[in-house]
Image (cartoon, rainbow, N blue to C red; front, side):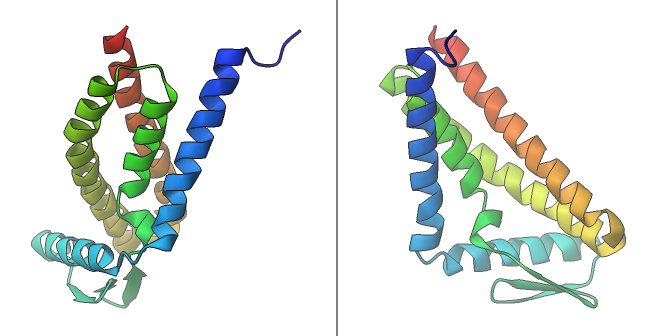
Length: 156
């Protein structure tokens, strides 16, 4: 009995190699400009929905609460996950590139909304924050898997 077929081993090796390389980039490059920008957008959105918020660099102050926007909060992890899935799968190159060009802005916008929801839960229902934060990570992952599956099926 085999644990994995050769194509499955190839996919897993490629996926893990690509994803962890891209994930490592989050820590090798200075992304303060991006985390500050996201903190600014989120601060504006929070104020718009009635939560008193201010920004200091990549930190958001919401009433008595201080939240730090870190590189993992930027949405790049979702983009890297999609890229790793696309490049680990036998999909035509043009289709991969199109998918990344089309879905990257969508994922980054989705991430801003996910962050807003997470921050609102943190502000109003701190006890639920941990569970909601993890749940929304699974929603992110499911969204990326769904986009990848769509592209994969379209390429067959």
